[in-house]
Length: 113
Length: 114
Image 1: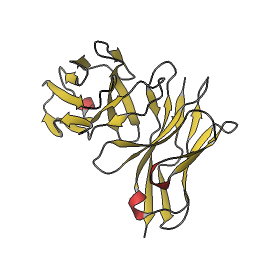
Image 2: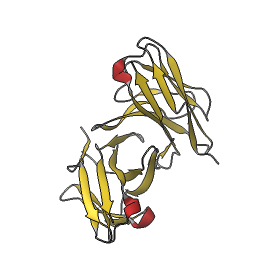
Image 3: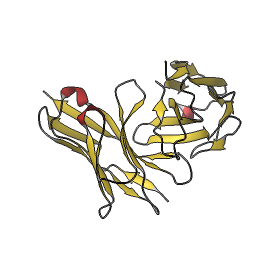
């Protein structure tokens, strides 16, 4: 069965510091991976996706993610965190055969001033 | 261009009552989805519709029914609400782009069943 794990419930980082939100996956075929962000009382917003090609994927708001096949990971990164980046982040894996997404449990990012 | 809209935003039901959650998208997307979000569990797929006229069960379909009324609208019905259905419900849509298009989410409906 396909699955996504986000091992950290919460990540704390100071503004201006780099941030990493971790995601690992399990899939039998080729992984199609996504990151979404959820701000308070809002729906999820797409950040970026990995389908194939370059292992470093760039997305919205200065975020990027690194796909590592040997470690089955797809960590979200940003070189310099902003207080406004504070939100709930979800990693997701696309189910084969259709666009059904399997979501991780989410990681809350708190960026302190 | 409103994207994905959902009504109502909030709802309180008593056990056994029924209600329908409405969802509409104006992006001409073929596929639509209903998820529920519970603390510590991420989002779980309830039902989805690959195209107008088709619907399929997701991970947690029990207690729910759906209708793809037309290409724009996809409703979720709770026939007899239970406290376990207290959750935040999200509708989403996507375009078929080799099956790899990102999903666009509505603002959610917060449902409490007492």
